[in-house]
Image (tube, rainbow, N blue to C red):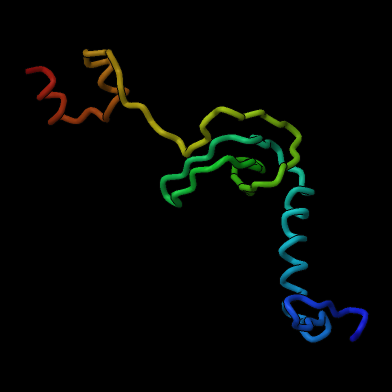
Length: 123
């Protein structure tokens, strides 16, 4: 048996015979470490990430470069600014349209004023 072979369940496996499997295994372990080695502008650590579009609902680190999310990872990311988001929900921008102002000035912030909706508000 070659020095690069090992026995598993009575079968011989050789890394020389399975170069693609070896390469994929190597990349599987290499990619997360490369991802973690990159430095981001801002990193949100251990936030409860909720993304309705992809269905992701898990604890993750989020790496932000400039104004774009560039990494979402289970591995710890490094950044110039690091925010501990443990116990907090990290999600895409929800917009709360709730307001208490019930006059024309406040309505302008809620929706564009057109002749039709301005006429309806005066009634």
